[in-house]
Amino acid sequence: MPTEHERMAESARQGPVSCAVLTVSDTRTIETDAGGAMIVRLLAQASHTVADRALVPDEPGQIEPKLQDWLANPSIQAVLVTGGTGIARRDTTIEVVRRLLTAELEGYGELFRTLSFAQVGAAAMLSRAVGGLVVRDADAGGETFLFAMPGSVNAVETAMSRLILPQLAHLVWERRR
Image (tube, rainbow, N blue to C red; front, side, top):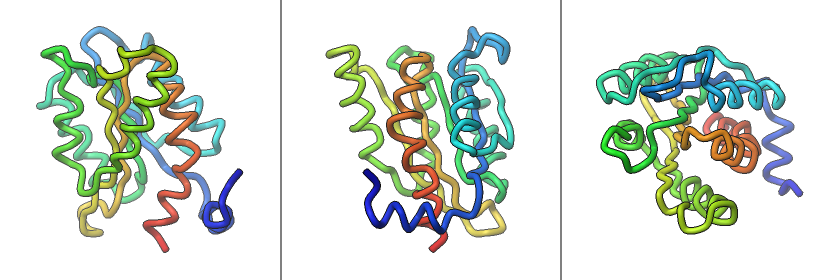
């Protein structure tokens, strides 16, 4: 049940949230990227738009420039990243995303792991979902929400359906008011 504050945010909503979707993977292609495709589908079902979508290998030198491009685009209000969030040596997404955040929303990662624990048990502690806000001056892109989630389809569905989509328009509204 939405709170009065959430109802106010929904009524003040200025149309769909414009998003970019990045998949970080050494093995997938856009054609085989089920997690990224799910993000795109769920955004469309929620009446949001996808301004761009890309896939890069798990290399900080490729992840960060793509994120920086999108963060510099004032028409992109949220960037959603999937993959590269585990604890393998090649998993570097979280380190890149954390460097870019101005204000981390710690509750996103905490809630994601809580929801994951109900699904996968103690293996949820291996998940490093992180998200928050990147604030820049208006000439450098303005304000953009940035969320990273694991690459599995189940993790994407959990993060998007249970956490990100229910609050995305509200988050954007909060920064505009």
